[in-house]
Amino acid sequence: MSRAFVKEDGGERWTPPALPRSYRLVWSGPGGPETVHQTDDLLEALRWLAARDRPGFELRDQDGALLATLAA
Image (cartoon, rainbow, N blue to C red; front, side, top):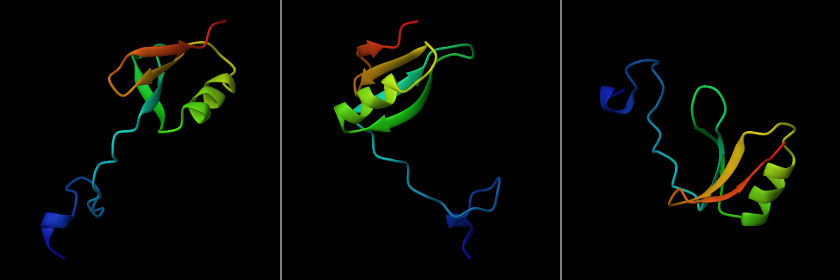
């Protein structure tokens, strides 16, 4: 197999990066902001956010604008 299609660190096949989604759910707790879920469906994003059992999650659009937060 050509090395052009193998990742150097783990010997895994190369996969293209995921396409950006319209909405992303971000954990803004300790350790800095981290995207934990992405979707193109606003209702799915809101349901996902509502199902979390602790505060610190944010719903942001593709441009990074804050749409909703999960409050305590």
